[in-house]
Amino acid sequence: MGSGGLIAAAALVGVVAVAGGGFAGAEGPDEMWRERGLRVVDRAVRGDAECASHSFGQVQELLRAVPCVALERMIFTVTDDRGGTAVVFVAWVEFDDREKARGFKKVEDVHGTGDIVPLSGSLVQVKDVPFTALNYDSDVVDGVTVVIAEAENVAGGFTAEYLDDIASIAVRTPRP
Image (cartoon, rainbow, N blue to C red; front, side, top):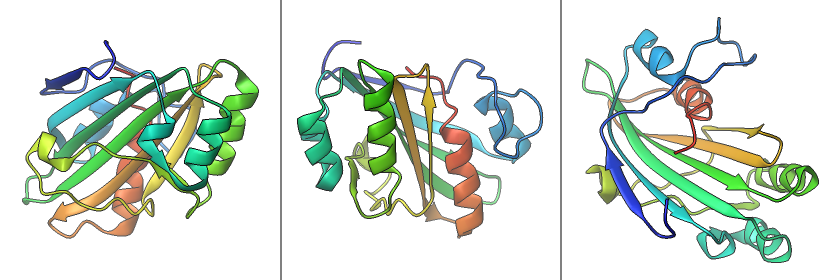
């Protein structure tokens, strides 16, 4: 995708094998959403060739010293049949070697050290919800890409544990 491009789509696609994390079998996120009675309603994706300007705190300081080679950010909503809605942010931060990716993940995983700036909720027809990083998961895929996922309640009162579960599924979302 071109730098700064914006794509809106209706559903997540692809199947990703799930390793560990307490989820049974090798399911992709689409199956996992269905099993939990959730469906993806809307999503927006943006790609950038630069990361530091889309981050803050110690994460930004690290990205200034150790630049990424690509950044993909996605925001989407999931809903249930009872009217509950959560907004989910996923970012793929790619580096040119494994050590840089591991170093980034080490800083990113510490709550309060900064973060990648989420896309605006207005892209998925929800009021901007502050992402607290309390409902968070991360992983390293392909050795050089760190995936981070965060989930926040919009309506319906999802519990913190359920939002953690949503983030754990979202981190397995295929890169756009």
